[in-house]
Image 1 (spheres, helix red, strand yellow):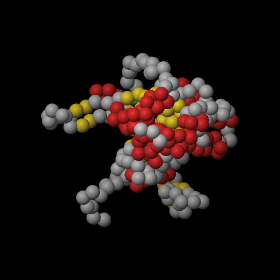
Image 2 (cartoon, one colour):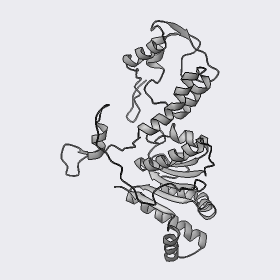
Image 3 (cartoon, one colour):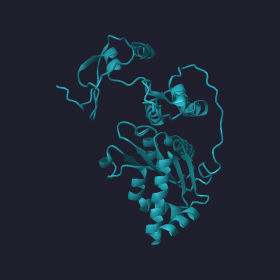
Image 4 (cartoon, one colour):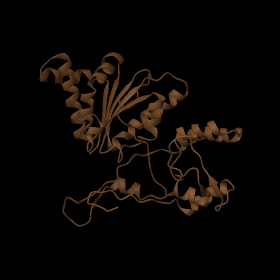
Length: 308
């Protein structure tokens, strides 16, 4: 195969030998043991032919990705040991109580001064260079009083976010997910999320967001700036909001929905413009009247968290 400028270069990696040997030891296997796998449907695993245990674990199986709650449910369905089932059931609770999760965009960009060394974001670079076991000083700082999920879980949320602005929305949905799993009747929310590509930076699309959509607590409406053809021609969050404006109007007018925005000031202004335009279209009024109605409509029902 010949490489052409613009092609991707795919690197086929191997799991660290340390991790492979750990798994082999845990399950009392032999690294030279040959096994034959079978599958009922399509799979990336080598099937119907002998393969060594070490080769299988080193080259075909993901050993470092943290297990999602969906993974744990699959394990629970296959496990027969009561002790193991109890341990698996306790994992999500233990994780939620002891391990906060951060969503961070690491900033490294050409310096505006034109100097050779790139500009490094202070906070993101600090976090990115931490190693397991490092100590970090931290504190909880309260957000605006309105920037929290409604206590009434029958009220849906309409969330607008881009990039790491997804972080608080993810926290909102984690809370709603726990309430749903506890047997409570949780309203279905909508998340409008903007990023560059469905493969590059559609954060948590194959883990948390996928699980929560399957759970029925959220409907995710993405906008891909570099691949708008994969998001109904919508390049930015505000474009997707306009595309799905009937959903927004329905949730706001008939379900008492609360609105939240987290992202850059530019994105927040875009959301304000499209919501004002939505009011203008719905009411058939002038720009000035729509702006006044917007300011009145958001009182107590719209909260924003802006970062630059």
